[in-house]
Picture 1: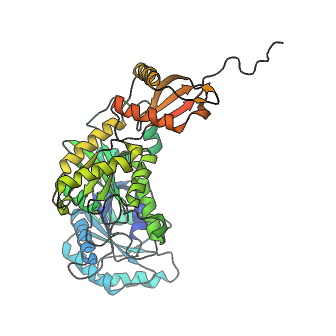
Picture 2: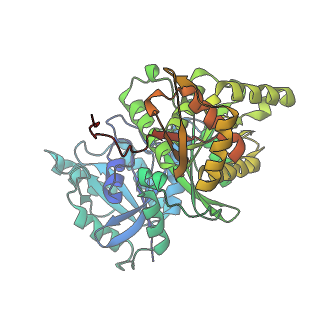
Picture 3: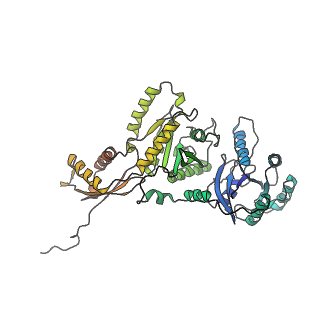
Length: 474
């Protein structure tokens, strides 16, 4: 048996700090600025002998119906409805506010079990705020310090009591499997040279990246069929990298929504720097990265830098031209975009690009098919025999140049890894190999082995000389 716990409260009371404490990792962004969290985040958590799912939520704020605050509150209310018990966090250091009183009434009306949590109880003068919490009428407050891990045993007992005194059973196997998936070290997963033949049923990790207001969250909501992520006309709504799980034709997908990536020179505030760092971690963790471009303003400098970053990280990129419903002449626009894609991204020649509309759902099925095809290419392995037969024919057609009057000799080639495909080429003088000839080999490999749009790594090395170091006989 497993259960879910929603952490709720007004802004800046320490909800995300408590979330990170329960999951045992710094997943949620934490800053002194109120209102950092906007979307709800779900993750497997453990508190002593309790295993459960914990939901981090936005701070409860009041605002007009169509405002960003109101949409954030709707996400929090959805989390409360989803949870079995709510942890209502108040700040013992500053005491109660009018917002605490208002939202205590909202929680009472839901009928859900509530645990009143007085955070920052280690601070000087926190006793008065702790006593004030009794006036909310939600039972005895549980004093804790999420920052320092104090009071966690009391919080565990309060959760069990709110659930009726029954201690839930062992950790759910599926939750454990998903937690293990999340904890995979990206470098090891991506660089494993002994990957089994491609399995199109295994779970797939996809990151959605792009400039602010390109439509990333809207795209994910359309796939899920619900308003799971906060959206709106304002740029930069998403701050945390939020993962959501769903299935596509029976295949488990974990999709990461990320903050919009602006030019580095424009990223000045500490909070935005944290959001960008979180987005970069999502890229490194993912297998496929969908780069969302605004079809009405495509291929700005930042779009190209984002795509280049994905390729340099070794992830498998797919381009999605979003907002296709706003294009007047789709056929001409598509031809122009394909030409610009090949010209502006030569380092990923053949990259798959799909016109879509997250608003209407146009092209989303095709986008997932291209994601699956790109993942298969990213995992591809080529036998050593095929590689060396190909190398012999390619070199015969276009031999490497002579450097300082000496011809370079290419001796042997083998694939040492996949994800992305990586090869070792044995040659006579690796330090003298021109970059232009390496590009020729990479482009020929893309064409002859059907490796479009994914990074290809070729590492040069020289064969051991058995006579090196021996003195010449006079």
